Length: 213
Ligand code: DC
Image 1 (cartoon, rainbow, N blue to C red):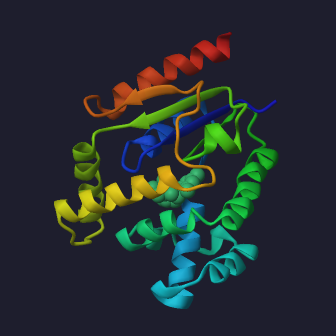
Image 2: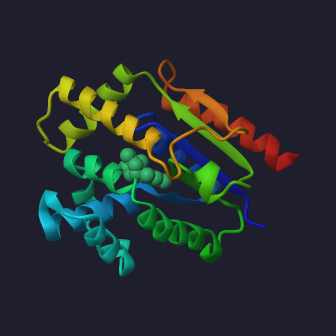
Image 3: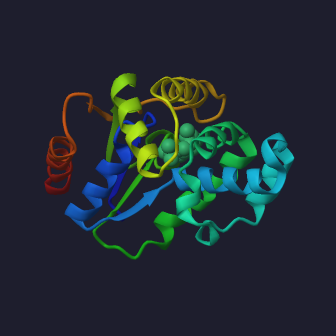
């Protein structure tokens, strides 16, 4: 049985950083499921521009290989926006759900896997061994995102980032299929006032309890 850590949470909450930290500390394989949605949004925009239809996206998703996409190109604010938009298409979620579950089936890592996204603990791996739901204040998340964008030389204001995050949160939480919600058995961690090392310590002790149990 593969040991699974599922991490869900808001955009910019620090779930990716936490997932990487867990992967390093416990030697688990890491899967960032956001790249699937981002990659598909990127290809849809590239092929059809911003007026792509749901059918356009579904067709691309059917013969989709994330390994062929340059990871640097999927981090822009426009791709972030459309990743969340296409995430509300039920057929897209169905196709990407299969890819996410295959990651576990194909994993040869005997230690375990850590997977982050929006519906990992609720839909993709509801039987995960440990689940986390990560949040942080909108102000803190905007500051982190602004920092990411400035490292990529993307010019965007603090207010624009706040607006984008609010819209994305709303879309992710309100979609009819697999909305962003904490699983009932998830450990809630608010990272507003704690740094990444402290977050990793909190999560690690809960994982160790489960591994030892
Ligand atoms: O985690 P991220 O910021 O890279 O995700 C980008 C968008 O992709 C997010 O706003 C919604 C969508 N997404 C999703 O719907 N389900 C996931 N498991 C991961 C991402």
